[in-house]
Amino acid sequence: MRENERRRRVEQTQIHRPAVPRVMTVANQKGGVGKTTTTVNIAAALAQAGLRVLVIDIDPQGNASTALGIDHHADVPSIYDVVVEGAALATVVQECPDVPGLWCAPATIDLAGAEIELVSLVARESRLKRAIDAFQQDAGPDQLFDYVLVDCPPSLGLLTVNAFVAATEVFIPIQCEYYALEGLSQLLTNIELIRAHLNPTLHVSTILMTMYDARTRLSSQVADEVRAHFPNEVLKVSVPRSVRISEAPSHGQTVLTYDPSSSGALSYLEAAKELALRASS
Ligand code: ADP
Ligand code: MG
Image (cartoon, rainbow, N blue to C red):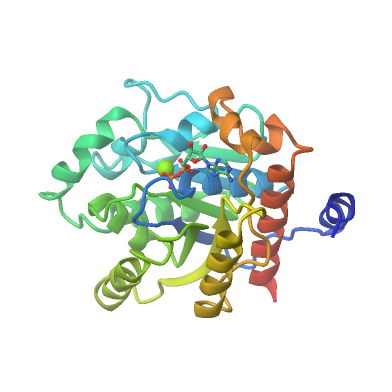
């Protein structure tokens, strides 16, 4: 389908608020597969459609905070204060300057120590869940978040465990490269373990193929293979490898505001609509 036609279709599709708020953890034990890029761009697309969206940056690197143009130097109240100190989520969230309705709980450098500090705390696996639940319970109708997306670090430490306990859905971005499926079985095993011991509602709901290169056979082979394994989870749209997508974070922006007419922006818009429509079907 031509890009103009795709754009016309996506603009005509309405995104509705989900019947119940969705909490999704964006995870993959590999680094550099597009977790952060996917988190911020899907979140921006949902917010631009009029929903209230919260990105929780739980990666000490703070890349999601940077990409959303959110201040996250060492003194800023952050997700560290929430998970380690027990602060209320409402005291750390900031609204994204470019996208109204899109909020972020930033990660600061403190978070690097949180993995170790969490070990000795009570309810160490469910601190993020408690914070989100408390926020949503206290929120008025126009403060409630429709979507909460948690951007995870690549490792499976207590921060990632907190993200898995807080969510009902796991959203896995997979890079279209040869080793894509390697490491995935480990991730699925870990999700099973969390499900058995800590969070029976957790399941993989969504997979997005990223950094798709239409010029190579490898990309389409990998995408086909992943689809064969997960026919119900993989979104129809894949995100192409795009310079505009990789440039946007250095401007503190998502690709949706940095270059809305790019093919990368269009793909993330389509992916967000598909993800939202699936919830209502
Ligand atoms: P992760 O969070 O899994 O470590 P990132 O989202 O940070 O991965 O992406 C890793 C790198 O790849 C970043 O430099 C990012 O800008 C780049 N990148 C992500 N998606 C794309 C894409 N579709 N096209 C081009 N570059 C991309
Ligand atoms: Mg990341």
